Length: 267
Image (tube, rainbow, N blue to C red; front, side, top):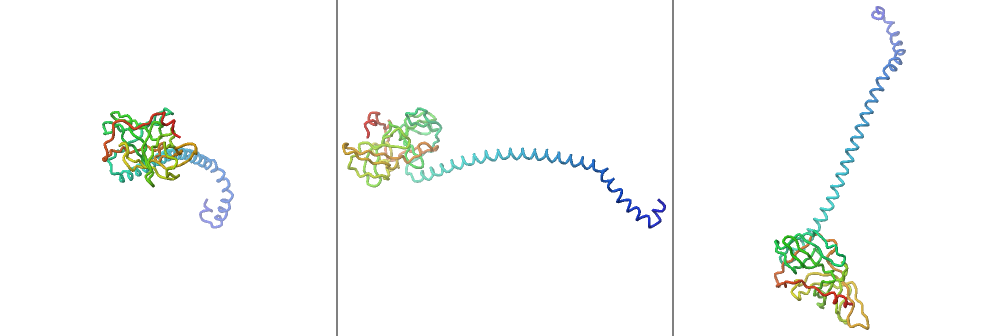
């Protein structure tokens, strides 16, 4: 130790001994380093699993919120269309929401969340952002039942918007089809013509869109043409509707319907 302290040559010897001792030091420290590395690896694995679970849960929550956003966006779009429609109407209107559908496959009835307490009355016209949907046939204090235009017991006086030709449109029992009954074979009606309510009978106000002519057939042996139309309203999709309080006519107290026998005689 005295030589190492006061003599220069011993420093070279100490340096050489350091190279010899280094592997021993590295081997002796290896177990400790392995322990530290194993602990850090275990902690990293556990933290990764925890973070992975957290991210998976956050992903599920975000997906659920996205689904809600899609539904809300669709509902807002429908309400915006209703608002645009209501601005074009001269009559007083009330927005209602569909809360039920009649399960009977032979009828087309819907239930609305507005009733007598909101001023709803039997025979009141119903429409969505595209066109006429039907009329109220039953009123309870807070709900009402609506007969859709596609029901085979429903009838409405209409006219062709292009030339004013009048007809009666009845439901076919299918949500995507209406039938025009007793149309003369020589009537000027073409595929693509727009049908609107004529206002006759005092049930529906004049000028509301009902549908578009989809088929015109002529049978040489029959006096009437076979005319079919597609409803303008989204009868199977609309969730929000407008109840119309007509200012221009006194509506009757009973709904306008046709007897089943009339529908059966239609071409």
